[in-house]
Length: 35
Image (cartoon, rainbow, N blue to C red):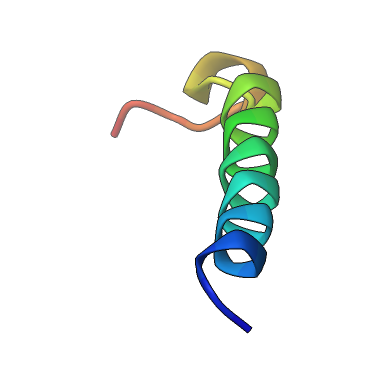
């Protein structure tokens, strides 16, 4: 295992994080109170 396999794993982790962030609900959408 070297840089190539590490880069493949890193790309998938970054893609997953970006997808999670993009689909995350806002406080208003989630119904969180402002108190």
